[in-house]
Length: 300
Image 1: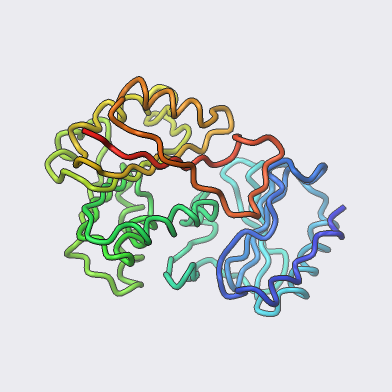
Image 2: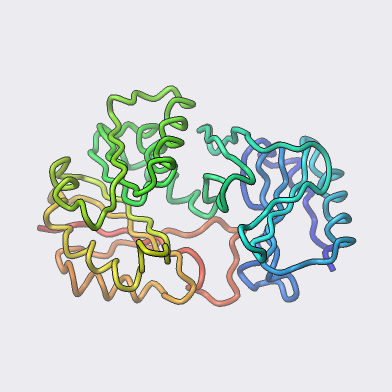
């Protein structure tokens, strides 16, 4: 079933860079909707959203080890099982590594939590921030491990305020900044519930760039359909005139029109500028079901 997938291009194009190799989750490849494959040098990670035959997985692992010359480990993560466990399919057992994306370093941990520490579909968003952050005060909501913050400082941001309810994730964010030799004196880490800390966000402002990349659903914390409007109506308290907003949405059940309508309703001073494209490998059979990254400008 998987024999036609060719990974040999990785031998020639940026093989030292982390990236997605195959995106079945976009439903563009019939019969393979349950499989994603990521290259996290030196690890090839197969993510499964339903069970796959053991023989098939072993054959795929052998193919990856053969076609990726720097590959030292092939692992599977079973998102279809409780707690999303990992399994070593071939090579070495590697659970912690540092990957490179566009010259920036990020520490990943495999098997510790469901997510490794870097969302590969957001690569173009991080690149945009790096190119547009110079001299700006940046607010990074739902910062997770602070990849946007690393990109902003690499692009010359004056200061970045990272907000996330998980202090453990922000601690990993500090590690990422240190990995890149960045000045932590220009970074603020606030381990708080955003929806209970609006005054603290205002205290650090105003901001010339706001990044909002919320989880679609976080039990007991975030319901994006309900909560995105709560954030949007606060924007006039936080933003500088002509400030930019990178608003992200990663729910397959909500298209970009949901976000456009919510902005119009809650903060009509925001002008839509453009939608950033996702990396080419993230093909979607139904447009709008994958990641949406929309750029707005705040006009007071």
